[in-house]
Amino acid sequence: MMGWIIWLVIAAVLLVAEVFTLTFYLLWLGIGTLVGGLVALVLPDAYLVQVVLAGVTALALTVFTKPLTKKLRSSRGFRDAIDDLIGKQGVVMEGTGENGLGIVRIGNETWSARSDAPLIPGEQVIIVHRGSTVVEVQKWGGM
Image (cartoon, rainbow, N blue to C red; front, top):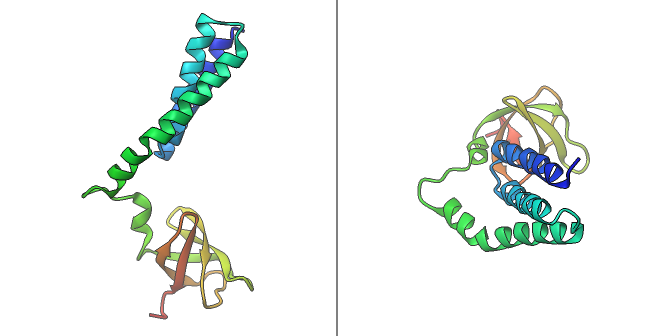
């Protein structure tokens, strides 16, 4: 199989995955792999050149577009879907241990959760704050 086809398949997988994550990072990696595929089409035996140009492209796009994506996210009217978690109710799936961490279900998703009060499975909670991967919750009746 020709190398450019492998690059194209990897690029397609990354670009499709980007549609589901909307982070822009997979988009830049996908574009980088497209560049690697184009180089493989022109220079099929220059593997190192393919990898280096793909990596440099992805890195440059990530670095130089970071201010743009930051500006987009801070613009008026932009609302991150994860911000909508605050105020929603959830159900404790795994109670909090000594470290205060447990697992809650919010809608159809499960999240790692932190709570100051001990939580037991089946208990209703409300999300009061969200981090990148952990939500902070309180017992639903405790407000």
